[in-house]
Length: 350
Image 1 (tube, one colour):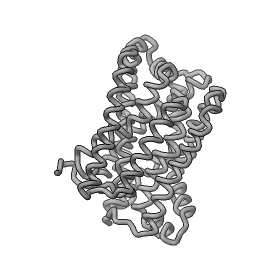
Image 2 (cartoon, one colour):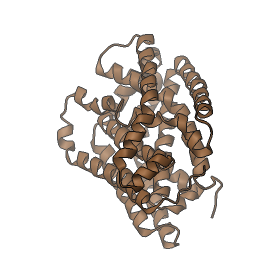
Image 3 (cartoon, one colour):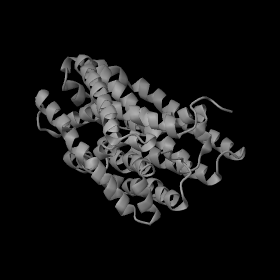
């Protein structure tokens, strides 16, 4: 069955509310309480990542096995077999990379997540907010660089010490001797140049968006919404502790947006949304995601045992993030295929 991006009005309204307005209100509220959050104990700051194991974060990728079935009308067993094989091959190869070169693997994970979280926002901006200019290759890649850079790059610029603490904990799981290889990433000169470059990128994206409105490609309202999100994300990731900020963003921004995308290609969820029952659609997602969410926990248990990890907060977070990394690579491949299936051609257009 073909699922176009021309949603019915109830679905469009529901997606706009749940994947755009609610995450913005949540992150905006968190920013208001940032002076208090700065003083929370370290263990409390890790709480969003802990909750993401069962609330939206980890589960948002646990429906990948149904994506080919929904987009290509494949039998469920064949869809499951194809995606299962992809996860086994890609995840296994990525684990080998982590074992052989943990420092490079960590950098690759940051870059992979940068791309993936950027592509997630591109879909929402195009399909929900109506920014048709993102069908253009240049606009799309600039937006991917900007949007993915907020959670992956801004915390490095604003809180380098905390960012480095997590990086060291992750790499040390595999080879403490590889930690010095990360030094170049945290060089102060890199951060100064990074602030300048990212500021320029922000201004370019905003200016290009205004030009697209002026030429009639994008709606003015969509551009204003994009600017509001850009401003919020700049502030959010600049002022908040990285672990807390990224944990909340992962579960309540990125994952919710992807869940909305999944709902839009599920006939049962679409029917529920058109009846005004978002809760029914969420329950359907939870039911679909529960089995593989539980199965994914085996990956984390295996890493915990295999790497002989301590039970301090940093080590446990490191194991969780490595587990997420192993699941992220095949997940990104699935989502990139979804992009090529659902979004306009990646060939540059005028």
